[in-house]
Length: 327
Image (cartoon, rainbow, N blue to C red):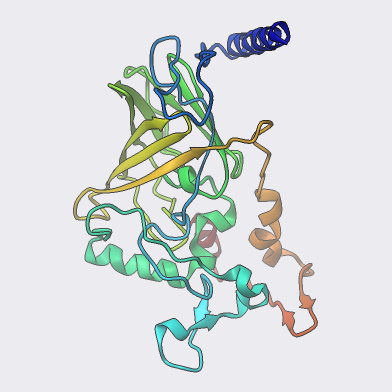
């Protein structure tokens, strides 16, 4: 039995070394006396850094709304029988989904007073975003999610940690980013959805500066947004081998009056055969995105046992059509 266990361990180590060589990265392996779930010192890489490699996922409601909020009937609602905010009912676009359309409540992840310090003009835009969620949220169009949103969407993501770079791959729309550990690396030729990440170690914490955003992302489904001037400072700290504390300082002088912070734990996915699965959502969103341009509409009607939904597509006039896609 001991020989069989030793052979299995050696085979696992050899597989890890071969995979690291193929990628050009050297990844640390766990010692034989340390297993997942222990609260002892987290595993180390060969260059004696905390080992962040693995598949992780947030377990909170931040993707709905970073701020504290009550549960509500849906992201799109309308006045109900009584003229109170809590009495609003699902609007037509989500009515057929019943309870599945509801938004769960949350204590929020915004630190300090829990408020996002918008400028007066930006606060108006944020309210308009929430009212026009279906038309404006980049997630519904399957655009790249951006950072930090990709970190707490309800999908797993993978970290592969090397000595020169840290690769992060996300399930949603197969997004990815590289955290460059070389400060002299050149920035991208143009601003991007995912930004440009440059990392460094401060003791046991990986600190990442993220810049070069194109300003087209949201933070969540509630309409919280930023501009191309966004600057993030992310901090990844292993609390245990299976829990990362993820802290982000957010600064954008075009949208916010001061820097502010979010913080949350992110958990290792513990399934023995866990791996990222493709979620190329653009294929699922094509009819939403372009169905109104068809000569003959494809999706026109849905009929259930208690309701019939008729869909009428329209094309925004002139440049508003192109603006819709750019939002």
